[in-house]
Image 1 (cartoon, rainbow, N blue to C red):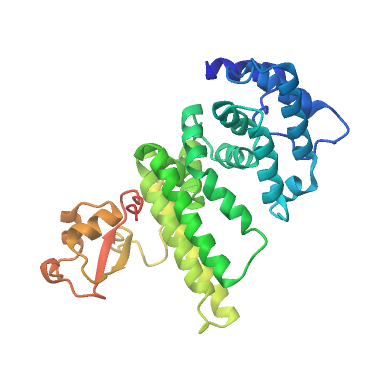
Image 2 (cartoon, rainbow, N blue to C red):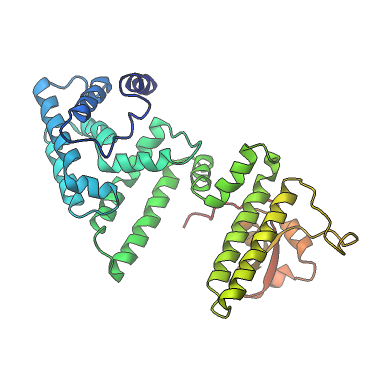
Length: 332
């Protein structure tokens, strides 16, 4: 049914029917026609009496053209939260709870922003039921975040961080583990860069994990160099150029490209596998560190022959092979 609805809406409104035009002139009735067309194809809304339907259309049209809605879409919310709540409170007096949710899924500011976020993740292809679950689990959180849009004091920043974490946990609970992992990966520029190389046919899909690890480590090292106050501007520039060259070489090797021999390096031993140094936290064990990085415990032992994993001291350095994909952190 929902697939048929999508096909019909695409025929009526074009492939971009799910995302409303934010700069649409208020004097046209294009958005009103879109509301009506959408309601007429929704099984919960199509049977509304004409007078109720027109009331809903009028309220949605009014909310859509308010300056506050446009400002919220551009990240400069002022009174968007109050205006949005008022709009849906009035629509809630007209529709049943089921009809209200159906309307919100199409026309609310939360649904609009959520749809834009998910549509921006290449290849995620969010399914209607997934979208509904994410919408339900994040609606209240997004409303609270919108209330904080105009505040930047310390208390608001802490509350915003807490709400952002709750939003991520809600999305994680709404999706299967595999789908949530895809959601997170597709939002990581380091992963997208690695995926782009594979998609372009420049490397074997099996090298995706290694490319991802190289990109992540390069990003972390770049940040370290940028924040190192002991470096002069010239030294920092040299270090960044060195890092860029190392990343290019590592990427070429991961893609199976043969590098030119450097002077005096023809007989040099092969470089070891890329590794990350992990600092042991209090109470961490071999198995815990292995889970964090998605590596086999035996691989960790082999990479650290001089380390006693039965008596790991806090602060000890553990070399972690980066041949595998970084796993997602465990839920809080």
